[in-house]
Every structure is written in structure tokens, then in C-alpha cells.
Image (cartoon, rainbow, N blue to C red; front, side, top):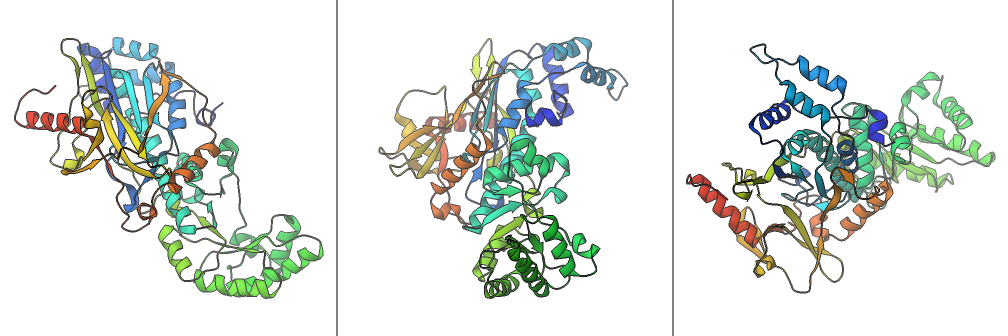
Amino acid sequence: MSAVHELYKPNLATLTDLYELTMGAGYEATGLADREAVFSLSFRSLPFGGGYAVAAGLDDALDILEHLRFDEVDIAYLRTLRTAAERPMFAEPFLARLAAMRFSCDVDAIAEGTLVFPNEPLVRIRGPLIQGQLVESVLLTVVGFQTLVATKAARVVESAGDANVLEFGLRRAQGPDGALSAARAAYIGGVAATSNVLAGRLYGIPVRGTHAHSWVQVFDDEQRAFDAYADAQPGNVTLLVDTYDSLEGVKHAIQTGQRLRERGESLAGIRLDSGDLAYLSIEARRMLDEAGFADTKIVASNDLDEHTIASLRAQGARIDVWGVGTRLDTCFDQPALGAVYKLTAFCDPDRGWRYPVKLSEHTAKISIPGVLGVRRFLDRTGRLRADMIYDEDLTGDDSGNVIVDPADALHMRVVEPEWLPEELVLPVMRDGKRLAPSPTLDEIRTRARAQIGSLHPAIRRLLNPHIYPVGLERRLHERRTRQVLDRRQGRPTS
């Protein structure tokens, strides 16, 4: 049983916004419900002012799609909904359709752990219009949130250098599901372990933890508290030293460590959770080394993020393990990815395939029509060089060698002949069924670390990163431009 279905009922069909159901009822009433359509999930700008994002959440999303059902309880609830005029919101033929519906769309997607960039289709749904519409919100919440957290985690891990990062955010996350999804995504992004035991059980993530201040407060003095903890957990002793005075706490931890050593055990670490972490860690390291505890690790926590970690390292902090919680699980500085889900192609029996475009006064919000794929180009060393968004239905001349910036048509890039192409948007479901077993979380995590390592350091830097080239294949750009002009001048679009 998957983690999603162990936690929730067998289906999450009603995990949707109401407007998807009212549109679905409209499609049913107008005879459009079964027309073939293509939807794409993407995001418009990179989070955290960074240079990349890490795709995550696909496996959970596929679990939900594969088991999508409107059961008797769902239908009974929908039957109770009323309009403002106190009429039934949904007609019985529509409810009968929902009760009989099984997800039968084709799904193509970018693999979890892959680096992704604005406007790229992370997930592409192709099938009956009504089905593609009904899964909009659940895909956005699952893929959008986990991609955001995986990206934040990757940045935190990048800032920590060779030191391990632990995910400590359960108590500050947005509810149980937020905590579990964040733990999974953070592991994809590169953290070494989580404090969340349920996430460890469900996802196989290593679990780590120390003790709280309350342990120390229960005892008459700190030394007794440390000794008692060492007696209770002799092979797992990391002591929180800042309940009263951090450096005095280090002295007491050393005494406990000496008792452990006499018994053939060791003091694994100490944890600093407040105060000047740079100064305290330097002093703690000196004290531990002088006492013969060079192997004892110093763990730091307390509202850390990538910027604080980078600053502490620049100050010479002697920290071996970083415990990052609130600012990771809540993505404190940008709590939403801003993912969008757009209709990009629609089959009309009289006109064939149409590629509708959504306009906006903001250039970034103008949609990209087509059956979209992504072709990534790498050089001979394996370094990522550029991404091209293209329409699988467009074929012909050699325009595929030119990438056009969707925000600035004068900014073009020619694909170098020696670059090697790699297709990113690949089949994962056909007729609502998965095509292959899911990769393990460790495999996804390994992919993410390898991809980040293949990115130029200037793109990986935390502040003002170099921009990785991503654009539209020229024929796609030209068609989109024509459609925008036609629509704005009141002419029909193709």
C-alpha cells in the first residue's frame, strides 16, 4: 500500500475546488465532456530568487490519479449541494457519470529529482476534457508544494557544504500532511534525515533526533539530566546544552561523555539551539577537542535557512550538522510555488486540434499553447547547457535549433551542434495505468544531487544566480505570437 493510501481513504476524488466540478457539469451538459484535451502543469518563476527548482511530488500524484474514484459517500455529499436558488447544484446524469468514472488519461511528466525551470510542463495530462479538468487542484497542491520544498532543501544543503542537514520541521509545518509531504520532498532535495517518525516509516527516510529542554528541566540540575539520558540512550547520546547556559552545558556534556567513555560508549554530539551560534560553536569545539572529544559532533538548530547557514559558515562556525525546521517545511520566505495548470490543446471534431492561448496584461501570464515537451541539451562533459520547450505536433524546418526567450523575443540562443539532447517529458501513465514501478526515494534523491552537480556553480549560487537558458522552440514561439496578435485584434485563432 502506498503512503498516500495508507494515510487517506482509497480515493481523493473530492480533493478538488468546486469550480472544477461545476465546469465538469457544464461540459456534461454541453456535450464537451469527452472531447480530447491536453493540460500542462508548470510554474512561472523560480522560487526563492534562485537559479533552479527540483521537481517533486509526482509519485504521490500518480497514486492519487490511479485510484481516483467518486464513491457512494462522495456522490451522496455532492447531491446535497445547492445553488443560491436552492436548486440541486448537480444534475443526476452528471452524478451518474462521476460515479462510473475511472481515470483514463495519458500522463507524461518530468521525473522527480530533475531540475526544472519556468514554463516547463512538469506534468502533462491528455484525455477526456472532464477528467483533465477535475484533477487540476490535486495535482497543483501535491506537485507544487513538494517541488517548492525540495528546491528549498536543495538550497539549504548547498549552503551547508559537506555538513549533513536534518529536517526538523514537523512541529511547525502546516498540519500533518504538510509535515509528511515536506519531509519527503526535503529528502529528495538532499537532507540526510528527518525527525518525523511517521515520515520515516512511510517513506523509508532515516530518522534522527536528540531531546528537548523539558528533559533537562525535569531534573534538579543539568548534569543529572545528561547522565540520566546517557543511561537511557547509551548508543544515541546527543545532548542539548543551552537550557540554562550553553558553555556550562558543554562542560556538563563533557563530563557525561567521560562517563560514557569509561563504559565503552561515546558522546555522539551536542546541540546548540540558541544564542550566537558562530561564537558558541567555536568555543564548544575548542572545549570538546581539549577534553579529547574531537569526534563529538556539534549540531545547530534555531530558525535556520540557507542564508543563515551561509553567514555562519562565513563567520567560521564549527558546526557539523544543521537541524533545519520552520523555514524549510513552511518555505518561510516564499510559501507557494505559484504553479499553474492550463489547457494547452483541445480537439474539435469540426476543426481538428486547436491550441488555445490565455492572454494577460502581464507577459509572464500568457499561456504557451501546444502538446508541450522539453528537450534538454548537455555538453560532452554532462553539464546542463539549455532547455527548449517545444510542441510535439510541430514538425518541419530546422527552427528546432533556435531557442527564443518567451519574455524577450529578441533574446535567442542557437543550439550548438555538439550538444547532446535529452527528452524530459516522458510517458508515466497510459489509459490511467502506470507504465513502470516507482523509483525509490533514494534513487530520486540521487538523481537530484547528480543534476545539481551538473549545473554551473554560477547558476547554483544563492544570491543573484546566473540565468539558465530556457526558451521556446522558434516555431512554437512564432505560432504563439500569431495567436496572441489574432486574439487581441479579435480574429479567430487556430
